[in-house]
Image (cartoon, rainbow, N blue to C red):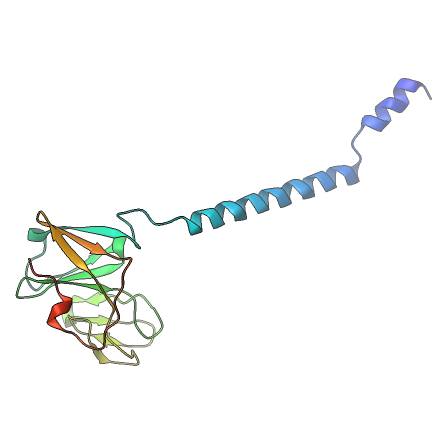
Length: 165
């Protein structure tokens, strides 16, 4: 065997070597993806999304008696008949299911275990142990803002949980 042929055989990648390199590269890719996901998960929420200050809209966009779902903030904004605002977290206090508003019945219905909540988030039926949690509402220059980073548990509705215009 000539020296160049022996050198060429040594430089060829064997099947086992190729599989080891491919396996190592796939593990490195998986590890990188996991690290990127972890980094994204632990980043603080920026303003305008859940976990921060969410702009709900202008005061005049919410007529008295209305219930509006603010998807970006994961809450319902109820404008009471007296013109004040109440921000209700869409999370059921029983097991945390997302609670939709059923306009025809003027109630929130939990699809998981049947809890019912009225316009002010108070329990009307089902296994929920307490009313829906609320978020603080502030009104600045005719704009409604809700702080979804500070949920407040409550045992019943109190007028001081609302924000007057």
